[in-house]
Image (cartoon, rainbow, N blue to C red; front, side, top):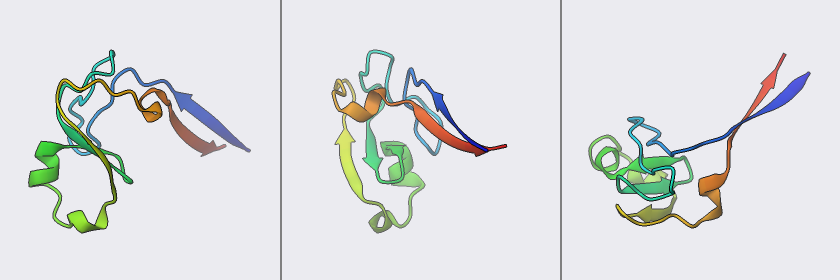
Length: 82
């Protein structure tokens, strides 16, 4: 049997270093790039990503911007089997 677990998200994190990139108010606290793979802070993008061409950039967010896009409030979803 499979189940869908939804985990509410208060802040978004960089998917590489786990630093917060947004606050609870949906304000960007660390500039980041949203890609088809996930959110990656600019520091990780510059220092840890070698093959940037393999990522599709959805949008870049600059510090202090308020994120108004729908994805910001979506919970994380995990499909698990028991």
